[in-house]
Amino acid sequence: NVGQIQTPTPVALVFTLPDDMYVLPYAFFVVPDLPPWVTGVNGTTDAFGNTTVKVSGSNLSGASIYFDGSPVQVLSTNSDGSVTVAAPPASAGYTTYIEALSADGQTSWQDLGTTVPPSFTYPAPQSPSITINSGLLFPGATALLDIIGNGTSFVNGQVSIGLGSSDITVDQIWWLNPGRIYANVTVGPNATPGPVDLTVISGLQMEAVYGQLQVQAAFQGTMLPSIVNQATGLAGVPPGGVAMIPTSGLPQNLTGWTMTIGGDPATFQMFGGNWIAATVPAGLQAGPILVQLFSPNTSVVIPPIVMQIIAAPPQIIAVVNTSGLPISSSNPAHIGDTLVLSVTGLTQSLTGVGLANTQVVVEGTTVTPMTVSPSGTPDAYQIQFTLGPNIPFGPNDWVTVGIGARVSAQFPLFILPQPQ
Image (cartoon, rainbow, N blue to C red):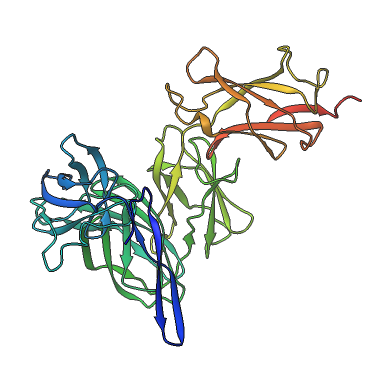
């Protein structure tokens, strides 16, 4: 017998025998609330498979909702005790069973016994399918898969790809829209030539193609997917920046070869034996972009890959002390001083979204900004920070500012030790 409780309370079980006693700590928990209960499910699906479902019942506030074990997003808790959820995509005619799970671990199924759980049947879309627009696979090479969906509902961040070969791994997936995704995949050097099946899963929707992909017999060289910005060493390169593209098996002399990035011609050169340094054409929009390398010998085919284009980096206009005087060789900063950066293009947004992620780096040391304040013109900010005792000092120091992979060019600083 357990009295009235306010929070989940563990209960131990004790078994007593004539010559012994067994204790099971935390055998179960007694909770103060009743389990969630689902009494009704109804909703509609649009032509793209986007589904809004109203789940009715009791004790649903704060509960997690699952469709066939897949968690769904709760859009709202309604005044009648029901919840409205965004169901995962599925094909027409698919029936999913609905479960509610409370924060204290109780489920709406625990009292059902042999009763069938509440369910929902999707009315659309009809007969979704996928095709592969690009997929050249060579042993030891990295390649782009350009997957086109017809009637699919690919959800950003919720798409997975399966390939019918353990010799092929998926490096990265890019979501473009509900009907198209890119993926970089790498084929093992010992992959067996022949057809490979492909499956795409998004939510409860699973589509497959059989035999469209083919591992070729010959390796002809490849670009590798770990592309970085020459200026920052980070993934993501802005228009006009230099992309460092690792390669394998390409000739050292690429005279006569051509490259396109996002369909535009790009200047490039072989660098350090197995890297291509390529200038990203101006005017490209941020997002995943195709990189293609073409040999003058048309029988040599290099698989295209995908790289990430980012918005232009911020620009440091000036660094001044708290008196407003620019830092220079004739007016150096000192360890312990507070400085102010004038920066433009920090967020590429009128609302300043992402300001909390602003990073300042002085001579390789990350410094936490004290304040980041608008300075009166769109996307221009004043960033205040202090030179702590761990900051390297000297006449050739530098400072950068950035958000994520968007990092400014180094701006010169002149720092001296703290005056005695």
